[in-house]
Amino acid sequence: MKVYIAGPMTGLPQHNFKAFDAAKRQLKRQGHKVVSPADIDRMFGITGRERPEDLAAAMLQRVMLVELRAIGRCDALTLLPGWQRSKGAAIEILWANMWRVPIYTIEEFLTNDSPSPLILPSYIVPDCYGASAGVRSRRTASGRIAPRTPRR
Image (cartoon, rainbow, N blue to C red):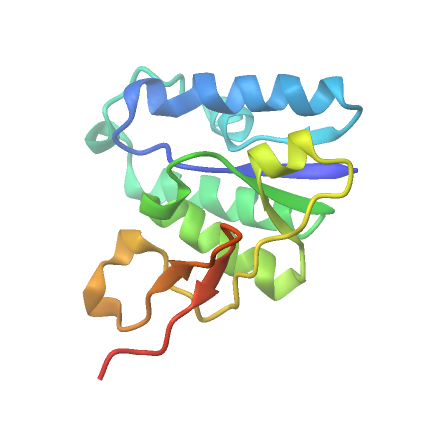
């Protein structure tokens, strides 16, 4: 199975490359082909040592377009811890929904033989966009994400 890893990067030490690399190793050990945004960033010369404000917006847009295209060629998208606060992961989730790529937490995907995808409808707005976005998510008793009704 070809798996895309999504998760927080901006503002984290070394752009969180270590978490992406660790997830990639675990997924490869299970026999999966892996697409990691950290690897795509490295192809563009991003090392993880830059400050976010030092990266040109135009380059980041090009990198994100490459990453989004890769999602459409994957069989699954896995989410690293902290994905709820990541605007990039929010965009990747919306894109995966558009391509009908099932979405899993990395823990669920790695530990279960038959993982259950998260229920993330395309209109869900992760917490990174705040309450002003109008739609919020909640956890069900089983730990799944379910939509709440829009705020009025």
